[in-house]
Length: 432
Image 1 (cartoon, rainbow, N blue to C red):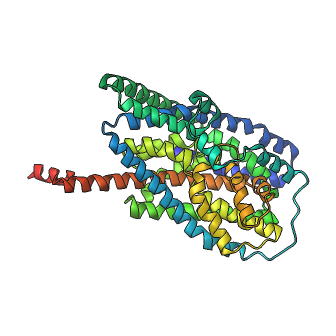
Image 2: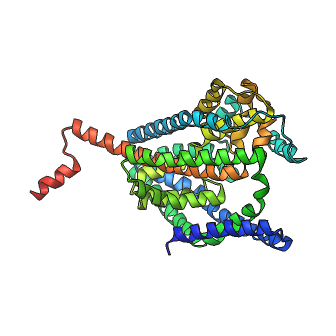
Image 3: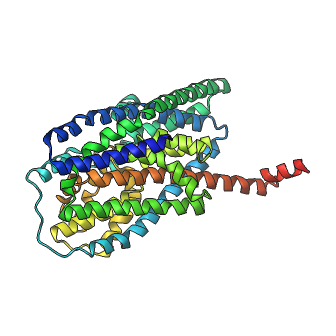
């Protein structure tokens, strides 16, 4: 049985068993489900411990191994344009879909959550540092790169690593080759370690999903249930729309892309972490999609750190839900403000739990929604965040495929302008 099939089987088994345990109301079985949760956490930690060295080594080998530094600028420009275009496309699609879904809900008085739920969520929101443009700008370069790595501050760490890789690329050839070989060996070792961890993926997935399946039933009711379903379905729909995008723009068959995306999607679904899916993303992009190593080594680490394609989905549906929850009308202009703000602010999301929702606070106030709605979104985010993480992971692989295709097209154009034959033309001449 293939690895992805074993993981999928464990996932289905955990969901079905969780539903049965929840329906039985047997306390000993519920305690058993809760007792195995640390096993799943341990498995995710095993993946996470490889992420920082893997990101650093992949970026350095991807950048420093390129002798022509101008090509890095071109690759970075194509990557940024791809990110922005995908975000704009998602925002344009989700606005009418989300408004149509919430138009089905009748108006009502304010709903009541269980005592303490909103207060606890608001404490999480209040615990995050206020994120302004100036504080975000200052935080881009870390005063201590080691501290940034230890705290998981990915964006500053990525920028330091890129600068370090550019510096390596300008070193004398002997030094450049030595450092490049070291970090290439480090990435190879990390990928071997990841394969060992993935071998126990069925056990880890089962231990992660079973407690969630046991305790999720209470949330799937009434207004909260509608929000969870709407957010989850929208994430799934946008995820599926990425497949024809890759087929048309990236020229990769649908079935091939779907099979390649499945392993990182399963890890993202079970761990709710797109960063944890990075090793699987790199492996499937290079082996199954056969994308160039310079592209995967540059685009994928950058994507998991900064590219949140689910932001227009979560922010738009979250704003509509909070407006319906408090009885505050949210018109099309307000929804467009939220959705298209996500295109640019998604790159500045702070690296703290539920940081994307904390970024919504000034936008809520701008369109007349109460800031307390942020706490509501945090309180009910557990289930839909799983589907949003799958969307983000699929978006990362989509971006890599599109950047790889644009790189091939630009290389062909450069050869044409220079009067050089295409590789297939060379082969044809050699045969005849």
